[in-house]
Length: 234
Image (cartoon, rainbow, N blue to C red; front, side, top):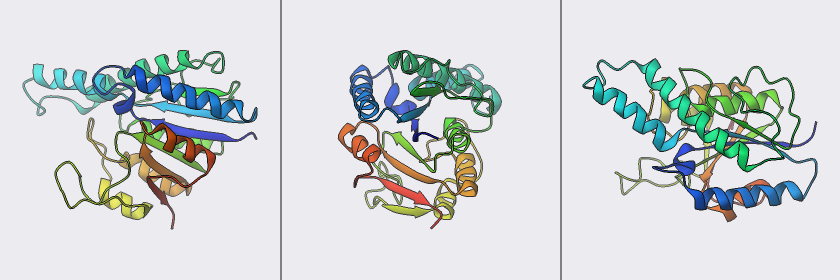
């Protein structure tokens, strides 16, 4: 099977509050250069919801006068809709390399016919990170890359804790202890807890890095030394 790289593309870098055109332009250029270097290379891009997801989930909670009345499943479906809108945009940016429609169910993708495959959210109970794990397993990728608005996984939230430090390596058990085991819609964690458990069972290798650092992203794709966090079985 040809080489497949799976990228979980955080909504926080696709559309933090509105669509980040500058980032998408740079990201598209980097991906096309990567594909041009080897005709066997293929990429799976799984898109998050970002600002639109948070905005619509927040509106839903506000109209119902707070989170007590808001259903988690409804918030998930709103987030999923945002991931699918982002995914449609990304899919069209990679035509003609992406002839297949946006993947809505990662368990029902019989073939990968182009050079780029784009996915959005699937169903409530987890984030698009989990979809990326399932697609990595389906197409026999031994690792996946999670690109977001943070440069690494930190020992604590660097926005609130000045002593927080980046962690270059983690075991899956350590990441699970940090993110917990329960999915909460809209919660900001380095990697979805449901996806963490599934990736640990599969023995995958996870790279967490800043998506807007395009030069660093190129190093990840090339297998060179990069800035970020690697999570693995040991």
